Amino acid sequence: MDKKKEQNTETNKEKNNPTITTSKLNDPSLTALERELISYVEQLTQAFRASTEQFKALETRSTEMINAKQEKIEASMATLVVSQVSLVSGLITYVQSLDTNVELPQALIESDKAAQAALQLMRAQRRPQPTYQDQPLQPQKPETSH
Image (spheres, one colour):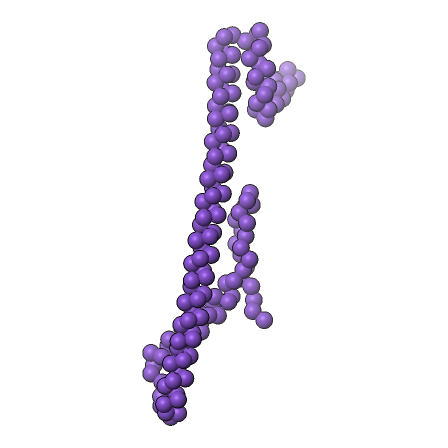
């Protein structure tokens, strides 16, 4: 039973430390086929590590690119919302300056409500941008306006 525990411990060490497989290549108790198989496992392990590094680099570049585009879209939307609020406000002021007793068109009232709601939503959604380097994604809580 103790021999099995020792073997399992050795096997776990080999899995966690691939350099052990390199030393195993020189082990005279292994057959040529076993050494060749160990060599292939070592090559596969190295290829996997290289592939993982490339994937992480690609993920980082992609995430940075997506974040940059998202920031530009958010800035454009913020400008658009502020512009819309300003336009509707100007139209309301203009219509009311023509005649103080005039009833505002329903479309203008709805546009004003929608623009103000968009402005409030935009302000509520502003939050610091998270960094995505080896951190799990976590939901962001919206900031409260004071």
